[in-house]
Amino acid sequence: MSAVGPPSAAPADLVVTGCTVLVHDEEERIGFRQDAAIVVRDRLIDAVTTAAAAREVPAVTRIEAPGQVALPGLINCHTHAPMVALRGLAEDLPIEEWFNDVVWPVESNLTEREVELGARLACAEMIRGGVTCFGDHYFHMDTVAAVVAECGLRAHLGQTYFSSQGPRGREASLEFALRRRGTADGRITTALAPHAPYTVTDADLTATAELAREHGLPVHLHAAENPAQTETSLARHGRTPIEVLDRTGLLDTDLLIAHGTGIVERDLPLLARTGGRTAVATAPRGYLRFAWPTTTPVRALRAAGVPVGLATDGAASNNSLDVWEAMTLTSLIQKSTEGDPRWLTARQALHHATLQSARAVGLGDRAGGLAPGRCADFVLVDLTGPHTQPVHDLAATLVHSARAADVRTTIVDGRVLMRDRELLTLDVPSVVEELTARLPALTARDHGRRVQEYDA
Image 1 (spheres, rainbow, N blue to C red):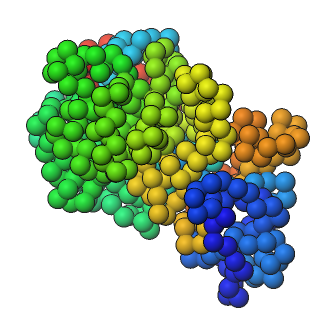
Image 2 (tube, rainbow, N blue to C red; image 1 turned 90 degrees about the vertical axis):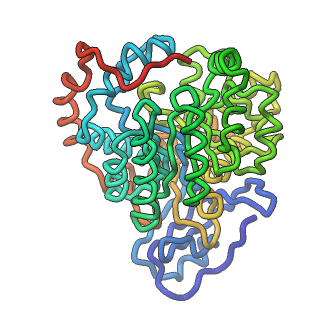
């Protein structure tokens, strides 16, 4: 398993002991160390050792965790955090009506304050669900970055832009990415964030690719979200959305593609040649909700060497930010889609939830694993409940029996953000009170405006 050993003699910032620890070996196979301990110094994991060895280590904070499993923190690779304010507002609609009749008219009302409140509520939900990092793609992103800096999460942030905004949209996305890159003690990474090939012109996509290469920035966008988008793109342009990304140079950047359920066989050689620089985020609950006929082709993408991370999308289309559920659904839906119960085992699902998700947001060498030198981003999961007992296969118990509510403690950069289910960095009641008061103005649609037109 991962390099482990006794901690050094100096006082530690944090010692978590008596737990079972998920570790990866040199071939990235998942295993578990029983009666183990994690020692944290200077925001990094200093050692994964035995509970006995850790007893002698002095620490500023010590957490005894019998009956709990320490996992790398979950990563929500693609979401729109402030959209929790729209949770449950646009139900039982096809995607065209969802966008044009509800979501994009309501989003034209958004102020920075509503974005802040939504981001606070979303971060609280994710911390409680064991998420330690999220990839966000939205508006007023300086506000979201400020919430991230305050609450202690890690985040990969991009300022969304449409070509309908003119050159200023792309320029603002770049300015945000450069201004916020590496802030919050390095917890914030940034990306350029064109919305999608159907809302951003080829010229703007090409310009984005050039800016990404010039400034060393990744790119995060929606593409081939569903089969209908691929069919429309072929009919209008003679190219799939993935071929558009190739033609405009985006496949030569570090690229995160949201959804990809419309990726087809002719796209796979293009994705394979990127050598892992392109990743896909899958958010299966939303695909079920919109009754899309396909899901992200995880098996084909893995065969092509494309990392696939887990995501929820925004709570307006998912109704939650529960990455734990995304992990379970990914495993089950992939089995059904492939007609193979052997595919996407619990251990494979955990691999997507850990190392593959970290790679998707550009943190493959820093997060996603519990080993010396990696960021001290991890969660403690309580498996003493009746729904998780007995344990015959720990990986299966984690993926198919445990729930987000079983997360007891969430730690990012060695800082405890939630301990024994108590949030330590966010005040949820005050956020809910103010957001509820603002809902009538936020949800008004009689003004006839919308931020964009969905025609894909």
